[in-house]
Amino acid sequence: MQDLNIALFQYDISWENPIANREKIQVFIEGLAPETDLLVLPEMFTTGFSMKPQGLAETMDGATVVWMQEMAIKHQLAITGSLIITEKEEYYNRLVFVYDNGEIESYDKRHAFTLAGEQKEYTRGTERLIVSYKGWKICPLICYDLRFPVWARNKEEYDVLLYVANWPAVRIKAWDALLKARAIENMTYTVAVNRVGVDANGHKYCGNSIVLDSLGEVLDAPASNKEMGCSVTLSKENLDKNRNRFGFLKDGDDFVIIPSASGISPKGSIE
Image 1 (cartoon, rainbow, N blue to C red):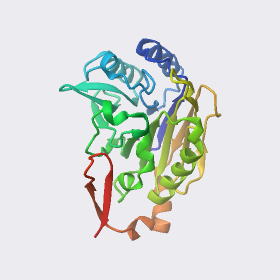
Image 2: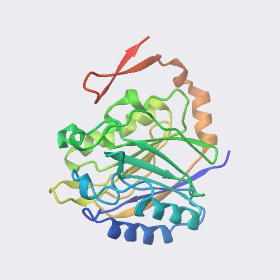
Image 3: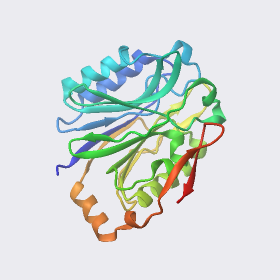
């Protein structure tokens, strides 16, 4: 099983300006090492965390997705991050995963951030996505999903848990703690990318992007509050070694997810 080379880019997202953000990302891509397999971008990487989808939403064949395909094919790497998508008169905070051949898979954020009124503007997702890429299985989730461990529960379905986010600095201690918990409890590499800077609503973001191994140890992390990237190599051999040695995933309880009456948050029932 080959290693997986991942690049993270935490940056100050230009507010509601897709063109400027694509240009900034393109410069970063052009500076990546040729062996990079996957580039991970933040949540709503073209706009910032905007609650005005009406003037910003794109389609799945719109400018940003087409640009992602062009970049992926040209540089022979996969690219992922979330953006505002419209489909059938609904709006979604949708993570788009573009393979190095231009093919696409997507995941719609399940847990709407009610504190910001996200549930009023965006339709929540109902299905988790497991991406198969270069022999690795990747589970991509979005920001607020991090607070709900049931949704991330790993029954040896994936090797990498991936979060893209606009997580504010005021609650960054929760981000740090929950990411480590998700890595440890799911015995998985955990890759998390957050933005930096201040958005148009005055919310501050300090980054704290990070890559953790399956025991919760830090493999790499860009400096806080700085616009920068990092690259890290994930070893499948080390992941399998840890899982085979400890076997924690085999001892977990089985359960099913039952949607709540509000249709916003899942509720677990142990069987």
